[in-house]
Length: 257
Image (cartoon, rainbow, N blue to C red; front, side, top):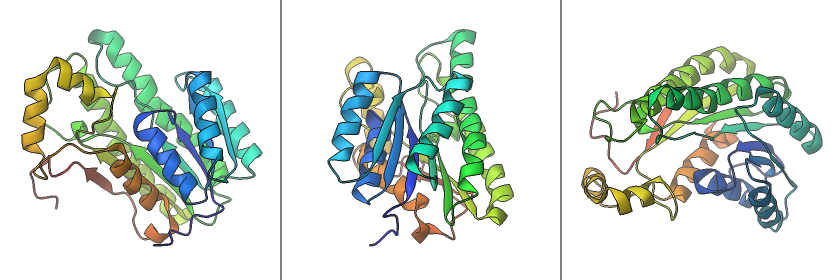
């Protein structure tokens, strides 16, 4: 399928590993010029070199997205260097793992305010596009009432729920301007060095339970999440607005009305 993405310009936050890296890879394979960021310069440089081999223009910077001024500078600078912007993907998450108020604050700044500040800064550029799109990466933790028992998981689920609400509300305001907003909520996604790799090693019972809950019989891959993101961001998905797409192998066993 031709997703009509060739020549488009996209920004992806947290794109040096995991789901973010796979999103950037799939965009590059579709001929999209990219701006990426992550916290570590070495990781960014390696990713830029890999993606450029696909024959697209790629720029990358080391950015802490919880630093408001740094995030704003990066988005504006990247859009200028790319010659415009069609797609913004907010992918960075502080993730669960730290309990107490510190964990809540880290997740609020990274997951929630990183998305809000990112969207607000990207909007003037997206308004110039004839196919502007925003995709927010949330989690099924944002809609689950029985979360995995781990430090910081309540804060994580709460912030992901807020992100879903924000994206849905934002989508209604921007649709009339020709900018589509959608959310992708992954379920248990396994990759080496990722959260579910750590759970497999440190909480094997929780890992086995997740395997059982995924009715497809396995955990997902970051490539499968990336495929959903790239499709939703593409002009081919032009009639899809304000949706929260679960990419979870059937983990959420409910009827999604």
